[in-house]
Image (cartoon, rainbow, N blue to C red; front, side, top):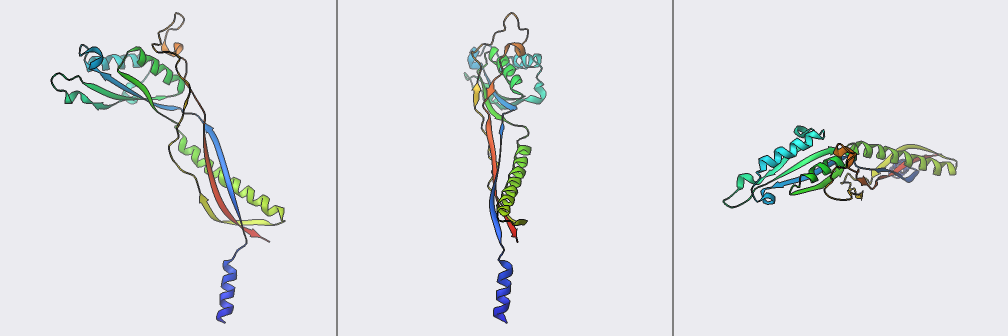
Amino acid sequence: MLVVAWGASAQESVRDEVVVNGYAERKVTPDKFTVAITISETDTKGRISLDDQEKTMIKCLRAEGFDTEEALRLKNNYSSYKRRGALATRDYELVVHGAERLSVALATLEELNLHSVSLSRATCTNLDAIREELRREAMRDAKRNAEVLAGAIEQEIGPCTYIHDYSSNGDVYFSVNRAMKSRGFALDSAAETYEEAAEPIEFAETTIAHSVQAKFQLLP
């Protein structure tokens, strides 16, 4: 009786399954950027204070339509640690949406001859939503593959019994495809604003991919 019971249990635990992989990918470009800005008294040998430099920077950014109260953040302020004979610096981060507006921001800041202006981060605002949809597409791809394989031997698939997600949520890095041609960005006679004069920065497309492995019950 024990042998018969064990055999029946083992037979129930063994299922005919089909094991498949699913894959999905999408090319994306960044639409949200962080610009690192540093102002320093060293550039003017202390003749222009940090407060005056900050006021000028904010005034110029607002003139180009940037909401500095929301987009501009003071990251580090070294002026409070100023010693006798030392020159102070401040670090800022400016968040910009859209490659065209990024070009305008960089052109505006470069014209001010600040201590340092650089692009520190580029990302997609809807990156999480894209990844979720790619996971769904990868799973649907796995199911289609299972149906094709089962159909080749005139069988059907049943419920999914196992899913392994190989995807990761690591950082996505974007490379610049075409940057600004020159520094200075002086307005020409036909352009009235930096938005008309600045040439948009182009970013190379980056591929985001997700893959899964799945097992489906193989029906007679």
